[in-house]
Image (tube, rainbow over all chains, first blue to last red; front, top):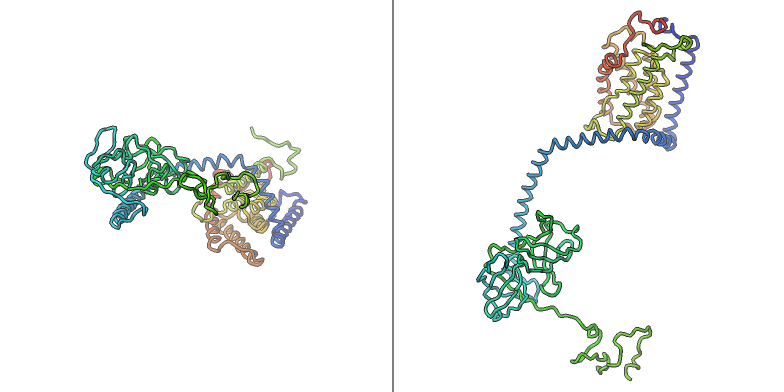
Amino acid sequence: MPNDRLNEADYVRPVRRLVLGVLIVVFGALFLLWRIDSPRVERFRTAFVDAVVPNMDWAMAPVTRASRMIEDFRSYARIYEQNQELRRELQQMRAWREAALQLEQRNAQLLDLAQVRLDPQLTHVTGVVMADAGSPYRKSVLINVGARDGIVDGWAVMDGLGMAGRIAGVGQRSSRVILLTDSNSRVPVSLQPSGQRALLSGDNGPVPVLEFIESPDDVRPGDRVVSASDGGVFPPGLLVGEVVQGTDRRLRVRLAADYGRLDFLRVLRSRPAERIEHSGSLLRPVDATGMPLDPETGAPAGQIQPAPLHDDPPTPGADNE
Amino acid sequence: MTIRPHPALTMNDALRFDTLAFLALYLLIAAASLFLRLLPLDLTGTGWPGPDLLLCLTMGWLLRRPAHLPAPVIAGVFLVEDLLTLRPPGLWALLVLGGTEFLRRRQSVVREINLALEWTMVAGVIVAMTLANRLVLAIVMVPQPPLDLSLMKLAFTLAAYPVVVLVLHFVLRVRKPATGEVDDLGRKL
């Protein structure tokens, strides 16, 4: 075909061939070099990409943002689908929750049948609710056991499932139980998985408020709430309920005790825990008047300071003086 | 008003203004294609390899106006593509260079035949390039993409060629020179 070379000058063809040959040699050599000494060529490639790609950042940012917006829009389009899916899952979860609640109840009943005591020190007196001291501002009930049965003020009261309140006022044959929902009720509790202490304070509503949580971020709705023995008021470990979050974003407790059917209440006889107040009586025996005794001789050792502050230990010979 | 180069400049026909403009357009399209491939989005999303549109564009363009695309430009574009898309550097660029030069030699033949025959010819060249690529990679024992994926990519590329040619013809106005068409200097194309 002579006519397709008409426009070319005489020198063009050899130059073109030369360039082509050089390119072919260079590319072949580059490929072989990459095959032989891959790390060096890969480093070159990395440097090249490094030099080129960040320069396109300004162009990439709007495009990626636009694509993300498109992605978001797509997810909006799928929102109905997602909603359906979540509903289905929620339904399943409800079924599970129901099953769990029933198991919890059954467990409590079985524990009751077997008369499992939460604490060997703990025995209980069961009373019948005589009256529901119904006023909008007082949530309390009267039960038919009293001082005659050895009820003492402050003892914890449970129904079959969980803690219901505490004794506040003991008569000869009856006593008053102030429920956890009463606005005067303040009960120390412990939140189960996180182990945090809080105060359960009633507000006359059905779900009392959790106050003074150390770090509310660690508490999630659904956590178990059990009683704590802070202040020596209650035996620890009684089930109180589970944490829920109210519409006002405060953490509240849905009580395990069934307040709708308070027929029988169980008053737990809790022995007050022994208080340790004299550190010296732990370290050495004391006599009846509280005087520290010498552990070796049993003689009163009044003149000896209980906690020597200096470094050298007191010698036994000095004690006998 | 059309911009006409000064008569003194027209001695060097490789630097004609419209040639340079079309070359710039080609480079722009190549850059955009690479850029889109580098974007952190998955446009395909299906895991299927897309067609090699840049190769189709290069070949279709070359068969229409070979003067627009000098061999070093094609080689440079595909070497950059090699480097950016983490292929073995140089091999595919070398093969593209060989294929395009093969087509460039036969440009005067392709000018006379219709699109179907041209498509067949280009398909043969691309298949040969792909085979050579796999063969060389197998010889030097470089791990390769799976065969089915590269066959799929080949099929997509071949299927995309007529579409790219139509775009070239109607959108970019890169057409085969008609019989008797002359360039700015009045010479036959």
